[in-house]
Image (cartoon, rainbow, N blue to C red; front, side, top):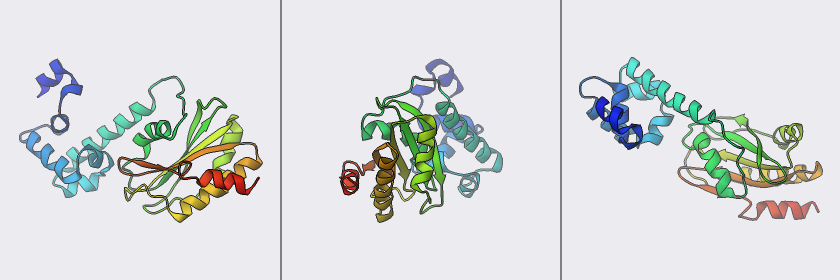
Length: 216
C-alpha cells in the first residue's frame, strides 16, 4: 500500500487504504474497513474522539494518531492562502462553511462578514455551545462586522442532530438580527442552518424579508 501511495498519489487511493496506512501493522486494511463501517464513513471518522475510537477496538496510540491526522488535515485546509471568495448565494456560503460546521457533535455559530460587493472580509466563529444549542445575541454577531468595516453579514450554524430544519429559536434570532442590523446600517443576507449533507436558507424561506418589512 505504501508503494501505491508513492506512485499513484493519495488522491487515487480509497478511504480505507489511507486509514490503513495511518494505522499500520498487520490487518490494518481490514481494521480500517470495520472502523469506517462502524462510523458511517469519513464524516464519522472526522468527528470521532480518541475515546470513541478506543470503544471500537483501537489502541490508544492508533486512536490518537487518527484523531491527530484528521485535525492536521482540517488545519491545513483552513490555512491555505487564497483570494477572498465571493459569497453571492446561499450555496456559496454553504460550500465555504460546510467543512467547518458539518459533522460537529456540538453547535457552533459562524458569521461571514462581506464587502458591498459580497466579497469575504472576515470569517468568525461567534459562539460555541452544546449538542442542542449555542447562545448568541445580535450584538455579538454585529460587533465584529462594524469593526472590520463590513457591509453585509451571512450567519450560519449547524445542527448536530443532522437535520437542517430551522427551529423556532433560529427563526426568532434571524428576525432580531435583521432588525438590529438595519439600525446600524448593515444588511443580513442570510442565515443558514447546516445539517448532514445539506442546508436550509432562512432568506429563501422569507424570514429576513418579513423582518425587514416589519421595521420599515
